[in-house]
Length: 220
Image 1 (spheres, helix red, strand yellow):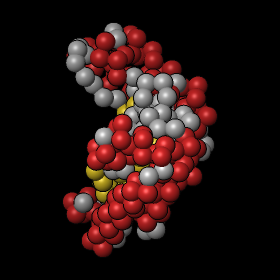
Image 2 (cartoon, one colour):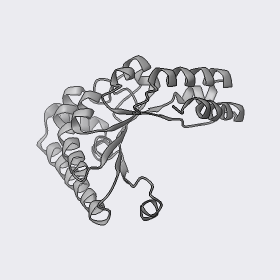
Image 3 (cartoon, helix red, strand yellow):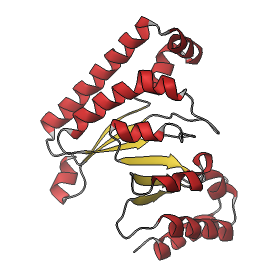
Image 4 (spheres, helix red, strand yellow):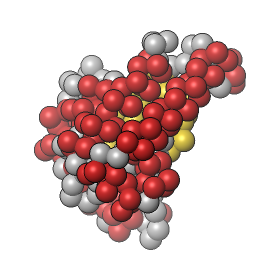
């Protein structure tokens, strides 16, 4: 962060991935967590409060040492292949209030909130915006482009490109898809980014075509 400040780059503060919803699953186990939610266990509310206070303190420490943070990065995978991992009503009851408190503290110094979340989160993203998220990193495949397009103008999108396509598609398929996505979301006002994560068995030709297509088409 000191080096970024010296160079005039964006100053970013990162919190652990899986900071709240996944942390609850790690601590309680999936079955117990879902039962706690359905039964409205008092201990679950206490656990969420403890985690919330923990992250609020981390943010305060960041801000004491680096008062001009541009972006706080959070990660919490909320979705499965075709639906959220948590009922929207349970998200509203248990996760949303904590998100709102945590993001509010981070934004109090005029910082932006970046949230990475894997999986299908269509039913949750209005609440994410209400909670204070400014930049949403979501996957195209489970959320579908026609749904994600509805977010244009509401929030900055960092689109995680279909990893199966990048790993197994041929260069022409990747090129066509990237061009389609850019045409659909490109906006002179900004608010759109592309995230491309490469995994085996992707070949070098596909990777080269991806990089070339992005360089030729991403600029306004």
